[in-house]
Length: 385
Image (cartoon, rainbow, N blue to C red; front, side, top):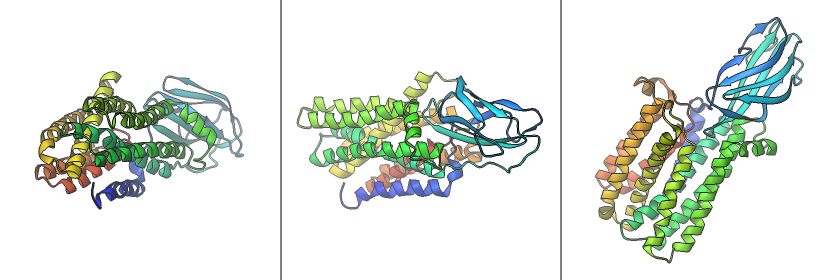
């Protein structure tokens, strides 16, 4: 893409960071605690010998899992954290009068980090409300997702669009290389985003990072890194080869779309495999749509790419509608929840991009599509209604 256009990605990335900073309350960690024993804020007379936390979905404890600080500031929990489905439990010696601060850390099956804090008291309360802030982690997670999505679109979507419209050129191979770099850069940022969300006071804790990498998040990270390195190797191997061999890159992109979908939100009541396939179709169609716009701009192939772009957009909109219906409880959620409002912004941006594409205003279309990527990066950080 010519002068000025390479700046669109860093500008959009800066916008993601700014939005996450301006609206930190939008990005709620998930899974979340739906019940605790003792309950948050409870004042009881008898000693407490165990703390139990029931989460909204299955999760893996990381770090201490559950930590309980007594009125004297010392750790009151002992022994390992036991997990049964979505419930975590740890033994505790809570006999002294006063307030106990409970902190828990976990990574959900969908690879999202979660952290919570609550207080209970023996006899009488001696402390105020506990706070839990992971704003820096939220910002880094959103930024990493933006870079990862943009890298996917450049790495795989550009190749797809090029192959259906006349073939790859040196300029397009440079775009693919830029996509590989973005995908590689995204992963360490995402890891720090995870640890900063789980432990805001010490985000660079090597032990916590090790624990996180042993969860579902680590498995997804390994697959995404492998995909970026695989694309790097594949692009080098087929660059001077036949068009048929180069189609192996979009084929790999379909597999990577499944990896991205596996780290997305689960849809209640829908088989996991079906939900992942729906999400993968959404990711892959976005990559194809973005790729068509980028190639049309870089190589002036708007006419050749009109039909692939329209088909990609149709799949994107239809799968997006299915995912939205699965996550929203009612139409009112579009207005009354942060997830719904962000989804509404994303839908409006998609509609704007389609209108600009129909008018052949490619530069403006690309800018709006990057805004779509930014809204999607924030959306994945929100808890569905």
